[in-house]
Length: 313
Image (cartoon, rainbow, N blue to C red):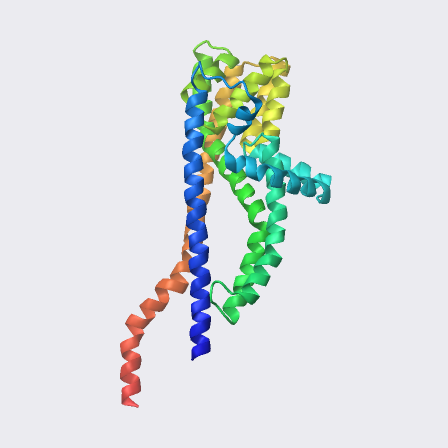
């Protein structure tokens, strides 16, 4: 009995220690965020200038200064031990997620290395300290869950960001196409219509159109800028729109007529997709009905009859 109490006391002590460390880190980060917001407010002032190099370095938040050497170290390991094809695919995934900073890619590679280092540490901690206080099959499931999170956690989060952005662009594309049709038919050019969309419809699709306009004004052709947008988005609807616009520029077809046909096609696709989702709803409802509703219904309907039969025998 004393050994059980000692083990329970040890687990409680470890839990209190983890909670205390977490609260300390949270309070420190909260203070750092307040100081960072103060520094951002000072930077926004016109007369606020920093001449000293040390003061300029101190303007960077402390958590970034502390994490930068570690991130650089693990990013070098990630770039070295990951194949170039994988790193290039990760860069494309970041671009599709709307993340264009190279530092984010390096941080992702560092997080992936940390995730793989987390697996043996989690296994050792679960087998020795057992901070969750579980045993038997639950401990094995905990080990498997921690390993899966460490191995595929960063990649799955990146895929979710890509899917979320692609869905946002797909939902906004028909309405944006209608606004483009109205603007072009009212007499505006294609670039002016894109400007109108960017001003009135903020979102991921407007950000892509803004990038297209920036590349066009920087000297790139409209076709190259649209192809680059297609590669960044990787969405069938956007690819169809880009191909239609490139063909219109090549063969001299009216842009308003092309945009009108694209708008009608997108409306048809949206209706068909809604009908497809409606047809899938009964199939998806079968799982909760079979495993959740039917057992309770059987207990209510057949339960009294089974009790009567058992009592009669």
